[in-house]
Amino acid sequence: MNLDDLRVFAAVAAERSFSKAATRVGRTQPAVSQAVRRLEEAVGERLIDRAQRDGSLTQAGTLLLDYAARMIQLSEEARASLSELRDVGRGRVQIGANEAAVHVLLPIIQTYLERHPRVQIDIRRVPSRDLPQELRRRAIDAGVMTFPPADRDLSSITLASDSLVLLVPPRHPFAKRASVPLAEIGRQPIVAHNDPSPARERVLRLSERRQTPLNISLSLPSLDGIKRAVELGLGVAILPKRCALNELSLGQLVAVPVPELAAQRRVRLVYRRGGVLSTAASAFVELSREMAG
Image (cartoon, rainbow, N blue to C red):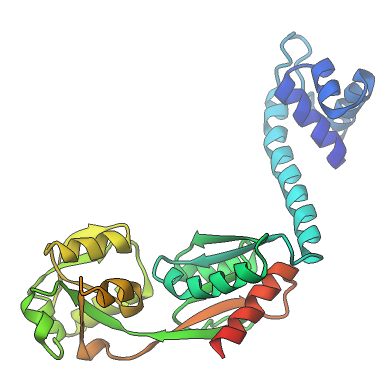
């Protein structure tokens, strides 16, 4: 099947008319009819119900239209990606990250956009466990995770270190403590993120091993919502300290160390080893390496 013929067929399906489709694609009506006929011969099925006068698709035509749309989209993405490979002045960088990782990326993004203001940066919310797969299938250029990638075809750059802390409002009894063990935290109402993450799983597994179940009284979909809930006294939260630097500096929240969670987490930018990146994406990786160093 010819991609140009698929484009013509998609135009016929959209316009429900051979003559209108001809105008849309800049061809003559006979040329449009021939393109559809070639496709019909290739698939061995009628695609347009010629008994109807409204340009209705047959069942085979409806099925092919779905594939045609995807193939045309892939073709456009390939053309755009090849164009972006040649020009860092424009293009797009796609990065997968969870909500907490964005706080580490923002200083890098700020510097990058100062150097390349016409590049579009698209941060997609991708769970850490899905990042290697998304990188391998080239859905994203890079990803951010807090554990080293096991895949040999992936490389990583350590961007920053962070630790999990207990966030409480300034008036909370824990606010003046030097540290609070997990067993005591379990007796407090806890505000948690309802999106699975390595940090959340680590805390839950540790509480199970210590037989100190956590009292999660409120689950929210965003870090900002969690921090605001803690400020209002609705509970305490265990989050990466870097996520609350602004609130901590303003005195809206207090970070209290938890001995069992004291180990530093390394936040990594992960990308394909030896894979072909666009010029824009390669520049982002190199800037990340520069700022990490």
